[in-house]
Length: 368
Image (cartoon, rainbow, N blue to C red):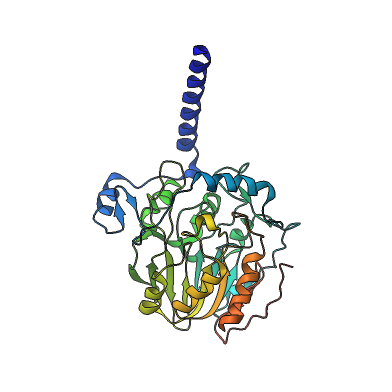
């Protein structure tokens, strides 16, 4: 028995060493803020004991019952968690994108190309095949990977990142994009990942909540959300998370990033609303993690509270990260938007929606 215990101990030690080496060697895990940055962060009211925090106390733990129910739902949970086949991607209309008209092109989940005042802006450009540091484990994209689109894109004025989770900050996408991007705007600490991947530090600006700047005539601001961060088992909440406000001459735009519903939406609306278009997360929700992801009904309410005119639901349509049906988020959001009198758009993946006019995008129910 003692020999068995010794062998088991040795096996566990070797496994832990292997995991640590793998994390340190694999560049997809990114990096961590340095000591100087951590010292600077320690002066902030949203940083405590070496980690960023939500200003409203937020439960982040799972109970044993939660884990048990999750395992059970892997086998008997909601049906249709994935589409039956690959989702087609609309042919990209590069002429529209290269025109001077404000527009939005969605690439599924939370990735999109925004044109405001003829500035080309990518937000959370996760265009890779799998939301994971390795290709053999993790949620695979419903369509083929979209990395090839980067070669066809015009020069990008700015990339905006909401937080460092794999379904928002993608190593293959950044590696392929970095040479054609003028500047990166990221939450505090996220610059360490980009620098590790070869992005020049001079091209990176880090933001705390409510930080604001002017960029090529646009007003951009980083806003709070109720979420968390981390790319490995040892760096949870080492970087910040949030949403982005982008204000141009014709289009006032807001995207929420990931996060649970709370009072910050009213504050964002008060400080920066109204918005011509809001992109609000409303997929990958679950009662067991309701504090970090909204239901579609909460997403519509958040849109109303930030004082949005037109709304689009994001964080769905590309990956399965929760236990609900893959089309459930948009179906519930459309029902709630009709009840609440909210103008909801739901473009196809790859479709370009013009924004410089009265926004009308007939719902095609393409997901059916």
